[in-house]
Image (cartoon, rainbow, N blue to C red; front, side, top):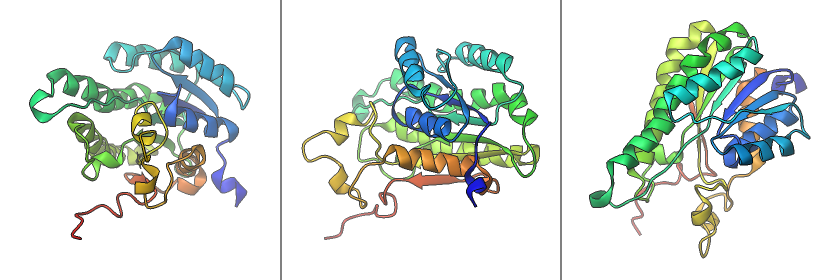
Length: 260
């Protein structure tokens, strides 16, 4: 049973790995025995995170801007020059933008969709060959795209481009999973609810907090994020592909119109 959740010796790539859910995922994979490459734009913060995480295993920091094709290509080439195969690709890097409908700028769509949607597709494209290299029928390569519950239900926020981008991530995950299944590459998504990150801190820390509004009465933790990823990336999750796993403490399940 213990070997069902084994990812020891695997090579993983985590974008947006310097903080938030990305750091949680990277930490869990390292502690489970994987070698992990993390990337982010802020090189100083990235290196500090890599140094901190290196206590758990082999953590390699490569700074990049995956919001551009040039940045994606350069990052993928660096990783692929160091490894013969990549077993796990976690597409976590993302951005958000909020503004009222009448004031929402074009840049608020371009920036968010470029990073949240387009970068995921082209990261998968650039790592495609290396993902195939180490894949087998019983132990496929794994791609996990980080979506959001905002792409499933009404966010109750004015983050129009963000919710649209995450819905696109969920559909692109299904599409790619079907196309790559016969190459032994599993493609899944995780739709997190509220985890502590720079993007959500202002909501979690506001007066009263958001935890009381979540059915589970708490926000997500490192163990929740890491455990879900390890399940999907291990033998236990080898037959799962094309799905979006909601990780939200019951928020989507309880969403609806309040009639009383």
